[in-house]
Image (cartoon, rainbow, N blue to C red; front, top):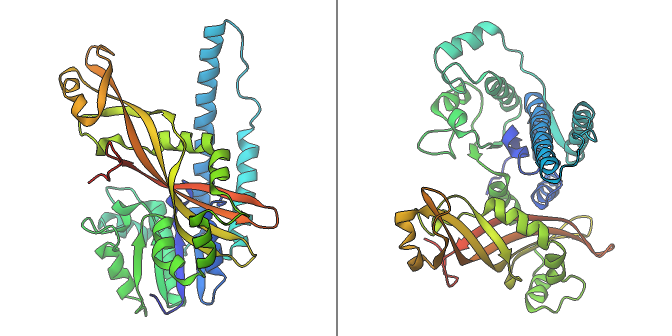
Length: 371
């Protein structure tokens, strides 16, 4: 466990899954940051990228919505208006304000743009020194220079949360800085650790949960089903449609067979069984964080070549459409999916304030774990 002041540095990729920072993992990060010598770091470059990322995602989904409306218009022979209910510029401004307010509320320190001259950047680029790579990496390099200044002025332990391993990490170890960046740190009066994790949930599991207060009595009561103030079954029922939609995005049937071709997904989802409580953590405002798994039985579909379809039966699947197109057959089968869910619960309001599907694991037919 890290003993020195700890700084958690968020890269732009940390905002993809939870752009408004309202999920249970951010709530645990917020709780953790209230402790002594724990600070969340976001550079102004990352903040600008996150806002632009929001704008691009909004434009993409509005465009997809317009395409759907055009299809509906063609099918029904009725006119449909384009998506005028969203003003992209206004929504982006609102998001910028909302994100800044949320980050400030959890004690984030914003790193200003670095004072680095163009000549130094060009020299670094021409030397192919990371984060520059093949003429790209300007903004990542600015982010890195902001971090270097922070490290030089604030010794401690650092965790960089980024999925951008190609620009920041070793090719052989995505949890270690690239040698170019480690060399930069050696030029500073810095003797602490600087490690990388690709997702916030890794930081939560490795560094945050171990130091927060676990509530074992509530955990045992929930597992026995005797804790009447909180019914996980009721919450799962309320969130059923959301869980179904998320599973369709996250489910991976390739662990069952290398022959399954995307797109694949599920079209029916049974009721949850085998609920297992993993963690119950007390939060400072009296709420609790609960993490648990639930097992679902789902009917799934996938596509395989006509030749491979003949052996689909041994995988627990059957051919539902042998001539789906010239190349592929559609197959269907029943799979078991173990879903990990995190939620925060407000006892005063008797409601879940946030619910998030953290992970899902597809199990082999019969419920056994995949390799």
